[in-house]
Length: 364
Ligand SMILES: *Cc1c(COP(=O)(O)O)cnc(C)c1O
Image 1 (cartoon, helix red, strand yellow):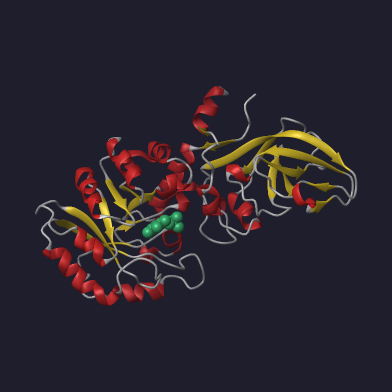
Image 2: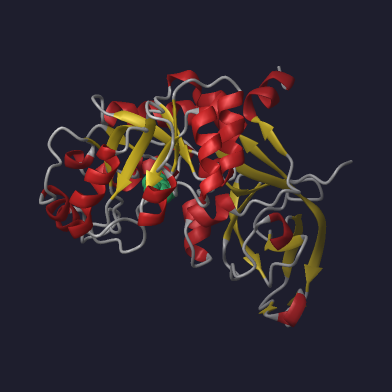
């Protein structure tokens, strides 16, 4: 038998979540964000699921952008961090990629290109995130420089929200945006998942949902399921050993968990080398035979332990869901002091990925 750990990606869930984004913003076009290997789901797989219907894809890895274009996708493909060095303009021209321009050096990189190249530029303005983007005072001269460059085609105004997921919201950043001079007539791209879900006034021309497409909530204390989303990834494994503990015995490295009473412990084939967070404390939820049970002791490289005292049928081979269907990744992340985004993106390359469709077909 092969090691039982695998990630199951459900193309139907990806399609459902994309359709929900569309429904929330029916007049807005969508960049499906597929950076970081589609948040761990696999770019090719995510694109195959969402398909040509998607108005555009956004990511920041050049090699993945080129592969996507070469696969025959004809829509807009945006590089969210733009060019890192001048020679990349060749790929941008050859593969008709849209590029974010967020600092002066990137404006310079576009000089001297053939007139009529129609480079699709997304001009990023810093409205308060203070990460990437031009200061509002630089906006007018930069827009002018871009418009004076005959190689530049359409210009889209872009900004990113820092707190669309929490109480501060987006109004303070929209105020900055709306005071920019000369933005009438520019197409706009503003909303991430949180803004798309919560603030219709941010929908604008092009939205950029990421995490919601994978079925995960961008909001603390709320799961994707509560927002009508379906988890696209389920990380599943099996119990590979079971043992009885006497009161006072400890589990795993460092002996950080001590049994208070007799307990049955299941050893699960999944550890931090698979992307499961090592800092997940005892008590992190795991689904065994359909029941939620707590992890016990430290997560090790290839294994973790769960208390299955209340699941007598959980023997060797019992099915385990680390996160996904029946065990929301948001809950696992919260227990581990992180967010679902990080867990999905950290899925390790050694974990085989299968598609839910194929599994269902095998089962008839
Ligand atoms: C990652 C990213 C997004 C998507 O954000 P989610 O919170 O996953 O929806 C949108 N825009 C930019 C610029 C990003 O970097």
